[in-house]
Image (cartoon, rainbow, N blue to C red; front, side, top):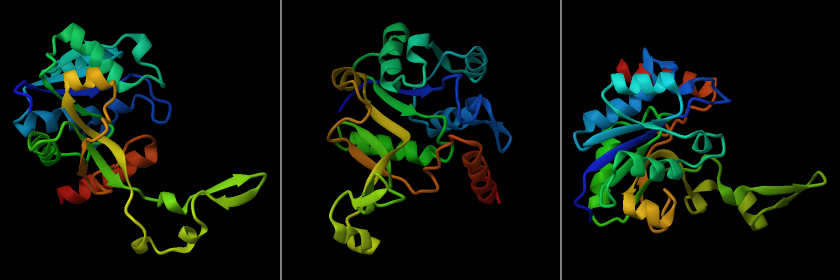
Length: 228
């Protein structure tokens, strides 16, 4: 396992179609991005926090919170840009060593907390080459159908369509909350979802992803309930 320092990398583009300016939108009285920054800082296991952004306001806010800022070039800040490319670009400008552990925390996962970050790093250090947070699929993939000319057909075996969920194997998906790997591994594989990565399983509630206003309202209800 790496003996390098732990760097939290928070990708925060200025653009967003589903919820404009969402990384700075207020959730229970504080900007959405602060949930990632505060969780990283409060975890006690992160040595450095880098916010990667193309937005002046986000950059200024991040600096006011004591974070380093990666000025993400426009070519890496489009709707189709990959976070992994921003991580690699930041490494060359902000001097992240290949042996350093990079913990990617998306601001859009505000219910990911300190405990999840600590668990992810414990899991990584226990022998994993990388860690990816996941959540059980809301809709079972084996129950999928295809539709051609208005006619449906099972995507897999027909028997799965009417099988009870309990009789089917569990399927999970990356929830975007946490990715852990050394920078060297990220450079080599050019992905945050490295084959063979250990899975950190999170609940559906903790995996709420903010994409549209309804997601923000859902997260607000959950957080206010927890605060009570």
